Length: 78
Image (cartoon, helix red, strand yellow):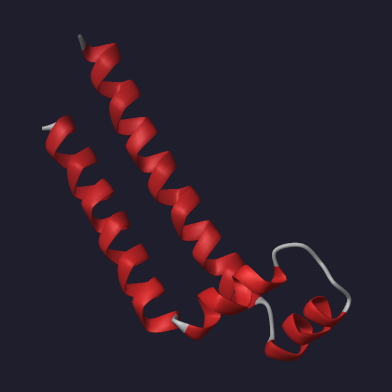
């Protein structure tokens, strides 16, 4: 049973880390670089622009989801 608990906690923490890394990657791209990528026709640059336009909502959603995942990991561990 302990292995299942360890696996679930590890999975939840890894998922939280991946979501946080995605947020950091999305918002580390500068505005001028984003315009260049869009002008050069890179796939996904339009989607990234839409994410950057709604930055406060995206950041709030990411923070909420990571907190829920972290709290779930703590709840499973105890």
